[in-house]
Length: 448
Image (tube, rainbow, N blue to C red):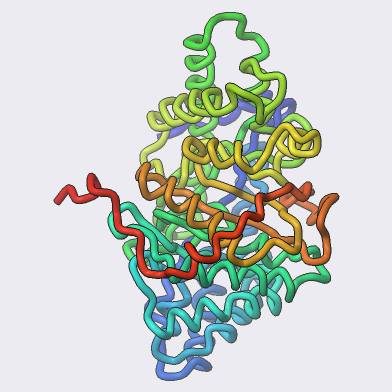
């Protein structure tokens, strides 16, 4: 049992170093909402989400007020909609219902407009994926994710090719808002079923009916601790481990309290260090405190490896259940240090790709020129999926080809931040992408 004193110990971190619980995410199974018609399915979904998550925001604010720990976001994830609507169709209507639920209960995002097609697509799943741009354009708070590869299955290149088209269409349909539809769409390899972070959260079919997953964050706390470290890299790692333990204890307490008050099951604590555009809350600045002149320069990947490993080692002992992605996020638009390095030209997409072999997710919140072709986008997705499949880790692509812009930046506001438009190599990979089929799983994945 965690005492309130353990939480109160962290008040200094909250006040001066931007410690917060980044999100409480309630996962809700919609399997019992499936009906003979899409209208009845939507009615059941609405009733269940409102009944289960109606007090989520209220409870989050209560806990924040009582403990002094900011809880930035309250979110909901649901069973992949492609599963729920396989018999009836009408996935876009379900998206509209979910958006209505999100607005009524007051959460900022609701995730799960998703499909798992790592090995192949049924005809319906292909149609579902084609509906994503419309679903994101006609809703405000719905997030979508597609899993196109896994270490066991390999990479579904037919789905990869399709996602290049989907991203381009989503950019076009939301062009009046800086192509923000793409900021709510993630393409995964090795997607996890208990991720509390958007836009990639969905409620896995192996989960209980209603689950609370919590994501903690504290890049500013880690950086502040490292400012006093004058020793070698072993001392740096030990310092990060100790701080990660304290941060994660906060997440464990909040997860337990939220689960108890909402009558839900405690799922996991995600250890990921999630940055924001606010000064003093940057993963990039941690890497620079370790010894880099600028993130993106030589040594960046090694520093990130040290950070990621120390965060996991420190956090894993502080909570009953570790899950989600758990490591360090490097979303360009959501990290002031990443933004600055990209604007200076030090941080490039190629370096970010190398870093994704280490970090929690992948090429995240990266804006590219609006004329980037769908084939290049598919090639980028394939490269990132390959890193995940070969290294048996979750990787993802959340890329935004900003319609009508070739340079400059796009500002989404809030946690989504400001994305500098980064140059991307436009060398043609159409022949490769057009072959389709499946890239086989690595030989060492055959462990049964």
